[in-house]
Picture 1 (cartoon, helix red, strand yellow):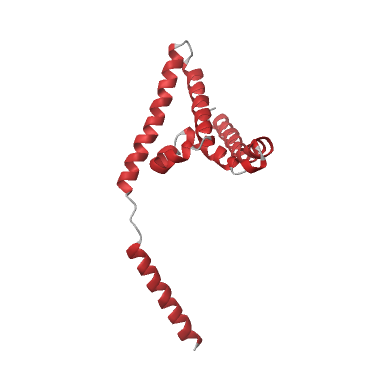
Picture 2 (cartoon, one colour):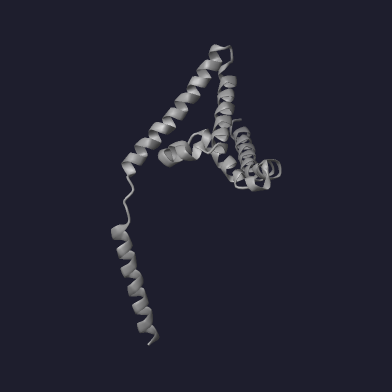
Length: 154
């Protein structure tokens, strides 16, 4: 009797899953890929324009690249705080998270969940707890790669 009950339950689950597959909307994959490519490319073009502007004002290549990164991270954090970056992400998908701006968006969006606790003790304190593990991992990997570079380049 128990086996019959389980088979009937499994048949209902299978029938339900088939029904869901029939009515579930198919995502427009090609359209999403094109939008991701365009938006990600435009973010990178904007970064290159910042680099060109800084270099035309006397900055060297390395400093201009660092300055552009800082500006892009600041703008992404600002737009995330204003709720604009999420709107961009609805249309751009992966195009908005691949560039360096996606990292800033991820950190600030996570911290913004604590806005009800206040901007100082909520967002301000939580942004470091969210970014901390990521930064520690990055530093650790950088040291490891540096050690490998020293060991194998001699």
